Length: 504
Image (tube, rainbow, N blue to C red; front, side, top):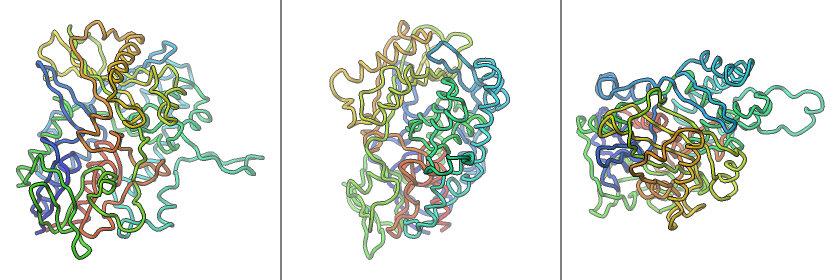
């Protein structure tokens, strides 16, 4: 039986704690803040409640496995889980609208034909077939297994294999064979395989954009993101995703995990070349192993641990985008027929891309996700509605979101943008709360409040840090460790790390 200290009570920290305690270890979690869940937060006021992080769940199998392995219970006994159907409604600048069914690729194809003309669905389906190829090639090495790294460092040969984009690029013919191969991005896929259709192009890039991957930078392999959503479905946890964090926290308590909130770790103690515990403001906590669930870049750049040799993979640059959210408390009932998720696409996709990649001002009318769950627990009564608007924006630092009036003015623009698409929200607003990347940075420690990206083969800026670090006895989990960001992937990182540590 090992004494294990986990730094951070975000979802990866909770998942790792519950798995390791089930394996027989003594586990203590140190959390700098006053609660658990990390980015899976909740804001409550006057009978309204909102998720302050992600609002929907993909690949629920990750948390089904966690529920079974740590308590032999199906996830559905811990939380109310329901598929979101329709999965989404998309509103485009030219006035076109398309509603997509959940987990039905055939239904998606039919909807696209009806909205964009015959043949649109077939072109989209072909690209999704390529996304399936990416999924099949990357599922095990990039999602389910640890990186083949020795002391946190990949060999050049392994790196070449894992960073090769498995998207099936058509062979070059004629004079094109003489030119240097071009790295395909999502924009390349859209131009060459979707005929540059503006609606299909926007649809392809939207899933990547939610993960902070501008389509002009995202590798062609990012087609796996819409493929996964349309093949395996999108799910809603009743009460909001905070209910999932509550369930995993309760599982930790049942397994005897100890929690120390408001206890920031100031240093990982390394003695004899091995992690031996952590230092906190309240003193040292000895341990046989340390698992860091905090932002990997922050862990080393802030001096909490010293990385031997060269910098690790997964140190994201500061220009990685963040999320801007507006929590809306609305008067009046949720209109009948309202879908759970509406996406209002950017009026000028090029301006949105430039804002995220060239340090230009935030896009005036970006892609906005509008979440409107039909969940009585999130509103005071049926005469009101809770709504969350979310856009991907430059991180804190590229834009000073704390400057007077900046956040409120941008919230006004988002509301005007979605109302211009016909949503009619502004006139119903009782009050609103604006959240910027600076809020994310303050609450979670993520550098610049940036989005933790998923690992995608050949993705910029590359693979994330291996779960077993070069410091013996120090393991890494969470959005900036293998296999990357997103609620499902941080759960996978916990599973991989627990497997590397093994039973007591």
